[in-house]
Length: 248
Image (tube, rainbow, N blue to C red):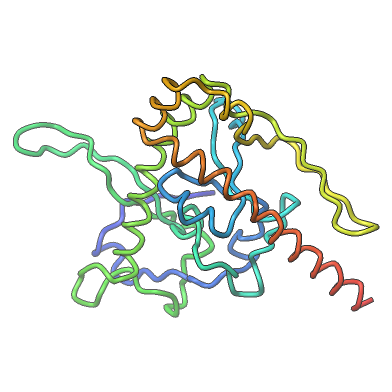
């Protein structure tokens, strides 16, 4: 069970975090949350889709990592075989929380960093990446994490409005993905949605301009462009299937 604490350089002065990858850290997942603030980076290596969140029914963008729930085709031993690491993975045990602070006599909810002390990346051996410097300042690693968390926070805010606008124009539509990997292996991806190219092409100029003015049109085209990365996932899956067959 998660145990969140407000991060500070006194209580957590010796905190260290494992930054390598592996199943033991929960990296064996088939998809991960994606945010509009990182679409430009993600679309170079990952297929981006949409799905509805269970419970809330709200749209969430995801980056596809594999063809099964516990399959991450980017995970190779302790390496993540991609140039860009999705923010939801890069943040490790950290997350943004909010704390009421009085600033200039006014009470405000300010974002603050929390850490999950039960996260498997928390390193009790002292061999991981230091969060704070010996003098108490932020390490370069923590500065990077703060940048990642800001991107996620901004992405959550931007994503809600963007997906609602796309949904209103009926641009998010269900996909039926049947992928034949070889003669013996076929996979079906259910529950995923994508941008409907025909509906996008048929939009009236006013709707297109509205999407462009809001900054959403670029994201739409980035999502569409990302789909060519399915070939990369297929190639890696086929390689692993051949490898498994040769080992028998």
